[in-house]
Length: 362
Image (cartoon, rainbow, N blue to C red):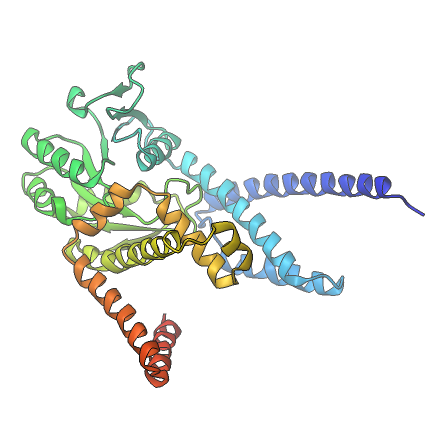
């Protein structure tokens, strides 16, 4: 009879073969990506992904394996392939050869994301941030210490600080493409418009992803024109070689949508975390007893509370639409309280049915 040690050795051998095969798959994927680029084809091929998953499911069923597990594994492998191909395409088609970029706020988390992204495109990247290590010649504690020679300037500072920086740039009439990455646009909407009217190359974007993102597949970037179509096109072109979905909208529509997309979701999870923290129950106990829904909600709430609370306050406070959204959330909570308090099952059910109807149309 085979002993445990022998079986574990055999299992380790299989694991190493799996890793070797994954390495082989990534190498093939890199070659495929190169062929796609030369043929002018996009990085992502949804039809091919569908075929890969269907073949994997069919083969798993023939082996009496659980298809869901295999699908999960294949999706991870597909994501890895896309990541490999996207990085190679960004480097190959990069817009930065012989050009320079200044990232204001480059020592921050999203600022650092743009530092690495612009470097990957071949830009000579400089950082202006009081929190940055100023020992290198490419780092400045204040953007005003830099000369006006940058092809692209990214303003990645906090919202109120970004408003001040853009206002100062307006006075100095900086050249080159300038765009902010703010989660709201109201704090500097008028300044952006004045910059464009002055003939400056200016646009505004909002990356709808966090600083830990390493693959833009499935991610969105919002682009806002503030008076110069040409400047907006230049900003969009920086992301042309990625698989991110580009969305164009007006500055006003952006802040209204963000009051729900960020404001509502943030407020809901902050309230959820507050109720739990005030409950007196130990987190570990609740986690052990939790349902799937509770665990999912815990994960989202943790990600929210791990973020910069000052930034999250700015997203609420500086958005003129936020109070309306929070009031709507407050009314919904009050309605649930009243339905339960009075035993009003019909209206409670109707509220859930209304939500179900909304999601069925999304």
